[in-house]
Length: 562
RNA sequence: GGCCCCAUGGUCAAGCGGUUAAGACAUCGCCCUUUCACGGCGGUAACUCGAGUUCGAUUCUCGAUGGGGUCACCA
Image 1: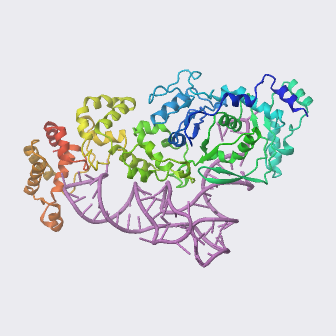
Image 2: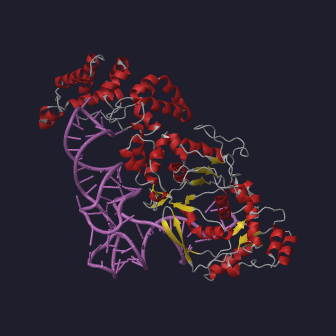
């Protein structure tokens, strides 16, 4: 069999060899020792989820922490699944969460500015492009041609029906299904037979001619999981589809070699195809990169109570838009992801509350190799820690931006009340131990909404210890004596006076000791005042709240509650 | 079903043959306090099971069980 001839018959227009391309794309210069090159390789299907961010953050950290390069390559080899505009949205979202690329299918402005794409053709940066796989057909074909020339790949004209039939037969006879070995009908077609098919107008796919022996095992080092052991691949996988574009397997091999990716971070769903990939790298005569197969994010299903994979249909919290809409600080989401990405991040953060996360020593071997359960509670807690360190100004600005985009009806309210809100956000802020009660924008608004008459509602029950008449008496007395000029202790002394005059204990302890001698204690009395003014039993320091509200509003609320 | 990966409290997880088996979240209790989602202290709670190796296994090996992944001209 003259493979040379077959190669020319199949790819007459291809005159370059893989070696030519290797010469065109030499290794990156000037990277420091140990620099890692990673890539994010999404298919433009239009949905970005938390799992993508999780992986992207790993890519970004690995590269940037090591002084390496993180680039974006678009895997658009399947036109059917492509969604218009998916990549700009992806870039925008990732950038929102602080992930930017050095190279690839993105347009990076000056340091820190947002990537933007209007024209995908022009939206590339870097010396290893094109970064859109649909533009790289000539490169893949040159590589495929080499394989055909060496007798390692061949055209296959089997129809879908034929393959389907084959599969049924194999399944019925308990044979490992697929096109392989003796079942690969077109493995050894003669030149004449190939010509005949071609002349009949048939378009072949190109399959890799596997010489693997599944009874033989080989070992691969995975940076996350350590050594994994796999049987050799037997399948004659297709490497070039009828649309002249490669399958993922082959594109991965060619691109990651030519683009000099050193660490391939991907989901564990790829682990099963590692045998195919190393076989392909081998056939091309190339070294394969270090694989990092990370785990999928899981959650507990409310109805079944079982641990299961996060699904985009059932779980809104998987979509990144969920966090943007609720107004989570991107930094909070990132901090949470860091804690599940590298097990010691959380402790590092506790020890170094104000250090930049760039200083954390991120590494692949610290990544979890068992399925991680997504924990909203934990996210919220991390978020509280993040927000506790923000200034009132930062919180306000974030709230404003969030409202502008997602709750426009609140935007003006916020901007009109900036001065007041800054004071509100400043309650117990700053200092060694700031309050940890702000979580995300929507929640923050709920948290402070009683400052606005139009959002004020009674959310808490009046204390049972206080009768309706007493409530009125308390509020009457309070309205008469309230003076914003009082300092915190003078103010509270008056509250005590009211309590005592109506038969309530001055101290909670007195009441606890002799519950029969009092109607209640000062806590119940101030609870009445608190609810009257804020509508709820739990708030930050009431004296400060009143200082911010001003006497007029305080009195108005007190009168309203009678 | 074949093959692969994984297995420590409710959750995320330290742990590399000898530990009172860390820590964080959640939960519970107490304390502080006019309230708190703040803060302080403390508690409950874990090595999936069975063999083997070993003086000794959470740790190593094998098997079982469970969970996950994968078996496309999708990535």
